[in-house]
Image (cartoon, rainbow, N blue to C red; front, top):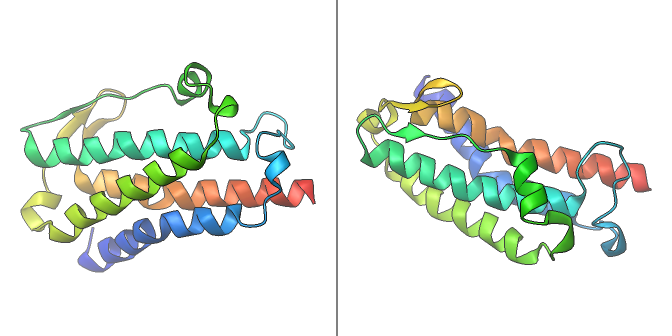
Length: 157
């Protein structure tokens, strides 16, 4: 990955929370737990997922940077949604968790050097896993879910 490609992804990562907030803006409060698109998560479920995913991703990057050949373990996002009752809890605390996790991780990213970006770990589902692998995944993650929220909003309209 070139420095320019990395900068674009870092900028996208930095804007992820704002993308989600823009998508949520104007969403009918009484519909945040609705499933207007069959088989897709509600807004409430998406926000809780973003928080849990962001907390996991924050730890993943820290482990990659601080451990030799860090072992990264996958998790079942659908199981999280059921076990942690995503659609039965207010999402505001998770929204704040998502924001703060991403904010503190961005501080770390901005201090990384070339050697940091080349560190390698191992993901139990995907194999070799580097900070660049991590960045490619999480730079688009919030954006993709913001688009999903927007589709839900449009379906309700």
